[in-house]
Amino acid sequence: MDRRICGGSAVTILFLLLLFFTAASALSKNPNPSSGSGQINSNSVLVALLDSRYTELSELVEKALLLQTLEDAVGRHNITIFAPRNEALERDLDPEFKRFLLEPGNLKSLQTLLMFHIIPNRVGSDQWPTEESGRVKHLTLGNDQVHLSKTKGDGKKMVDSAEIIRPDDLTRPDGLIHGIERLLIPRSVQEDFNRRRSLQSISAVLPEGAPEVDPRTNRLKKKAAPVPAGSPPALPIQFAMAPGPSLAPAPAPGPGGKQHHFDGEAQVKDFIHTLLHYGGYNEMADILVNLTSLATEMGRLVSEGYVLTVLAPNDEAMAKLTTDQLSEPGAPEQIVYYHIIPEYQTEESMYNSVRRFGKVKFDTLRFPHKVAAKEADGSVKFGDGERSAYLFDPDIYTDGRISVQGIDGVLFPEEEETVESVKKPVKKVVQQRRGKLLEVTCSMLGAFGKDSYLSKCR
Picture (cartoon, helix red, strand yellow):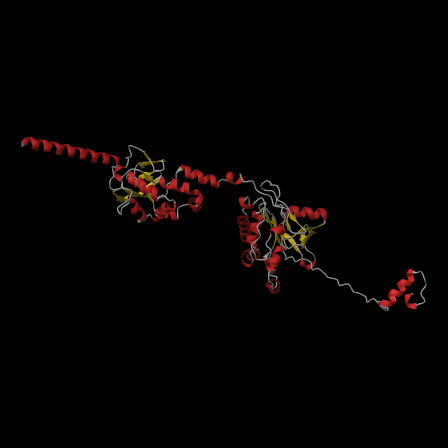
């Protein structure tokens, strides 16, 4: 009887030992049984991240398609997340860098940046390195390295160069979240962003020259060969201008193009501010900015590689304009168009021209009207008669693309005189109409070589 009891006890002990080793083996393969099933429960650190004060970061995680990756990481490890505050991603982040991260083609960079904020082990604030131990490296989920340290003196906890402002902010069984002051940017992402933004990558794209235009059909002939950056556009400026007043200008292919070798909008803004600070040209600046859309059009033209010279009438001259002259539709644009020369001229170049040639005519944007210039009283005089103006404020603004010259009058194109030719009445002798039968008879008599006795055949 006792042997059977002892034998049964031995079998029971062996069964319990086998069950223990099986359970131990299963635990060694999955040290976190609560999360090893691959299902995220409501007490997970990922749920806490998505439903916390770090909403900007959680939105980026969703846009980067990283939720499944983080679920797998939580299933294998206890993780530590360094979460930037919302203000660091909304207001403090460079807008250009944020646009770069959200572009669909840069998804890999966004994923690399976000995984740089996650460590695949649990590091609480009580496990932080001391000031004496210095910086401690940790491998991130993206196989980069971050350094944890404490600053000397005040003992602030740091991850790389960002301060931990909310240590152990959210703690869960499968991980914890530390709040940090700003975004961490790995070197690879920063280099990728700099490479996209650098001028070298822009200049690597050869600019395309403007195509030739057939003047008879006003259509493109053929694609022109590429031209070096900075060369004048092949397309005439009249074809690059807007089709009518107050309309956005047509895109003109040129050395500027998509590569923006010239920032026309900034240059136009600079010369308008110069007019305002110089004084005496407020009316001209007001027409360019408020009364018309010419400032925008001029910026587009300069961006496409064109150069402009503005003859700016002063306020005293602009005050002489009547209401009738400005009330016609498109009149302000036409007046200003006549004061813009599609060349880069300075006071010296214009004065040298009129001294050498006597009288010079410059093209204007009010095609086909030209403005005449000649030497007078040691200066340059534009126009003739009462509608003339002197160049008296030279080189108000010159930047190599836009030149502004101050004049003391408003210029108007010469009126084309239409001379009607007087037609004298001419007396027309109407011959008497002959009948069809008589014409046939006369032709037959002439064929036989006989003189006709009919007077009407003679």
